[in-house]
Length: 127
Image (tube, rainbow, N blue to C red; front, side, top):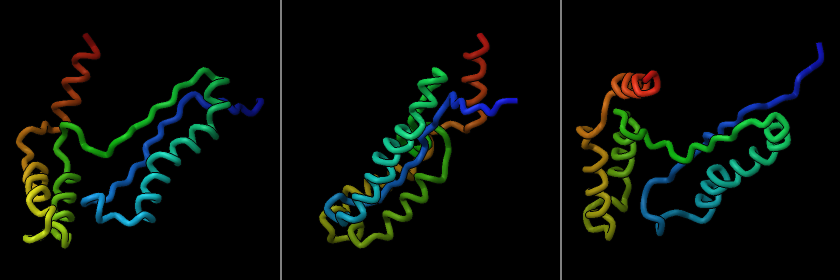
C-alpha cells in the first residue's frame, strides 16, 4: 500500500494571554504573545498549506481561549491572578477598571452548563 501524505484539515488552536494593563507589559513579553498567537499560526499554516491545498482541505483558526457562554474556571482563575497584581491594588491608576473586570469575571450567572448547550446545538443540527 502506498504511503499517503494527504492532510485534509488543520486547526490552529494556540493562544496565550498576559493579564493586566498594556503599559505594564514588557516588550519581550509582548513579542512572546505575538510569536505564539500570530506568528505561530502563520508558520504552521504556511508549513501545511501545500498539503491542505492539494487535498482541498480546510483550515480553522481558533482565536480565543475565552470559554464563550459555558461555565468555566478560566474566568475565575483570571480574576484571582488579576486581583493579586500590584497594579490592581488600591492607589493604582488601574485599580478601579481592574476591580470592575474582576466583578464581571466573577459573575457566572449568564453562562450555561456545557451539556445543555451541547444538547441545544445537537437538536438544531438534527432538525
